[in-house]
Image 1 (cartoon, rainbow, N blue to C red):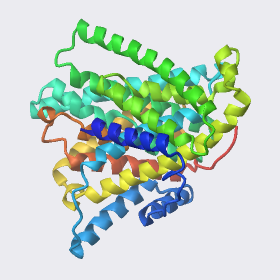
Image 2: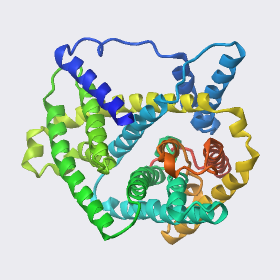
Image 3: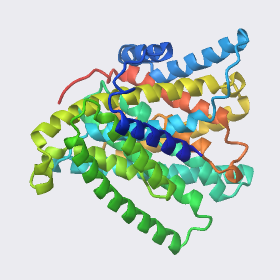
Image 4: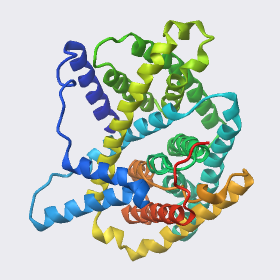
Length: 414
């Protein structure tokens, strides 16, 4: 359902662009009051050191309470959440990839961040799943499906919260959280789609990886060429729509589509590193790089808007009873402690600084998105909105307090 909605929206907007490129996209739309509030939170966050996600969730919740108090009837908005979340995930991974610099000196940080995002995630997922199975008797597979959302770092929060750290830490967090999103989604889908893990499961998975790499190469070259040739003043929106469309179609065919998003972002963000290839020369890299800078600015603004809408909407959907649920707080606290004990161990194993990297492992958009896509037959009663909300808030507060104590979020250059 979510994929069908996204595809329909992308196709309609692309058709509108083709037939009338100057129509609705050149017009300015008034910024909603809630987005202005979210923007103020985002701008003030580096100074107050309060994660903007907490404030946005609070505003969304307050709007819900106000609507109930004044008897304002608002339609059910919950079906919109997965659509906004999926688009947000795509744009956040793409935004992070655009910011990364690709060269040989980055080899160690890429390997370290990839291992740091993957190994603890798998261990934590199995650890939580075993606990779910032991105490609830749900079976290891169902436990694992419900555990994975809590094991994935949210790049939506981590990247924005790292903007005032030293360059080396900011880059590491961008790589780690982006890899975490990709590995988390791939791992989750692999477990969901395979009732029995066998050699055939891994064979099919390998084929899917090969297919998405082929799609990525073709789509990346095609979109890069299109970006260099569009001369209309509205040129970036069609590219963004095509990115979302390609991702959604690939996802419908069970391909790990976030790999395409990440590689495309890396490619166009580092085009000057590929000048030796004849195709890249045709794109006029000197001019193209300037266009990519403009593209990145637009992407940042759209990503902020989608991310803010998602957390405001999720905050609106929060029930007070869910937040204060005492039945799940022990589980939430246990998972929270497990996350950071495991993280501290592997930061030492991979020889990374505990301060400030230990504190920046929030759960957020990706946790919510995976949670609401758990198949109906695999949902367990123990894992509910209360547990998700509590873990998101606990990890966000821990990040906030940690950065306050260490004083590490003063922006510096290396």
